[in-house]
Image (tube, rainbow, N blue to C red; front, side, top):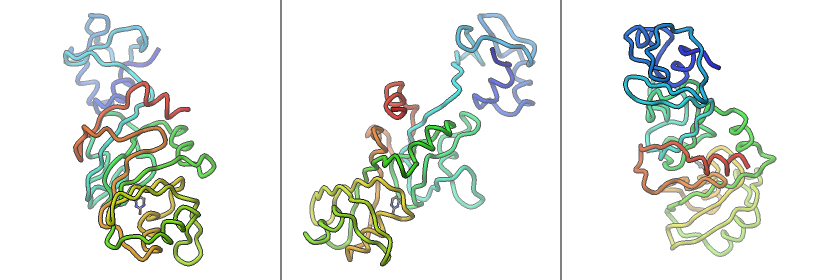
Length: 231
Ligand code: URA
């Protein structure tokens, strides 16, 4: 059982005050009966909740896949820049991006309110693979590719774990890394005497960016995707 106002706040219908207004305006029904008390409790699993004519399902945890555009930062709030949360609107309270993409990196950004899942995806002990599509200024040599595959040293003394390298052509490749060092791919390319000109994240572990999502578009992860992430 859950309190109606708490549930509606969690679902992103606004503050307790906003939610009270919606309830007082008779815009909420449970099993077809108009609700008139914000502190009433209902069974969030079995009862049918309708808000402003739309049936809504309460879920404690929310998982969203965003195709992050350029010039958007991986943060929950910022005075100067648009954040990944601005991209999806106020759908649920307590959401945050899992890990960080640079402001000029595009692609897969997972947004959730599930701290445990986020922690396990980011934990260095779990070695979760992240695949990137990378465009570079200067082609890599065979020696650079070998270094990346063996574990390249960046900035003189920081050793990276072995990466998977899939060369597409002289200026395009896919790189899979299992860590999340600061500006890692960019620094790996600098260590290869090249420079990243475009960077897009394609996967996080078993989760693949839905190629139907244009930059800035998002969707909820499917139950199957969430199940895979939890494994
Ligand atoms: N590596 C980078 O350099 N930037 C990112 O945003 C992600 C990985």
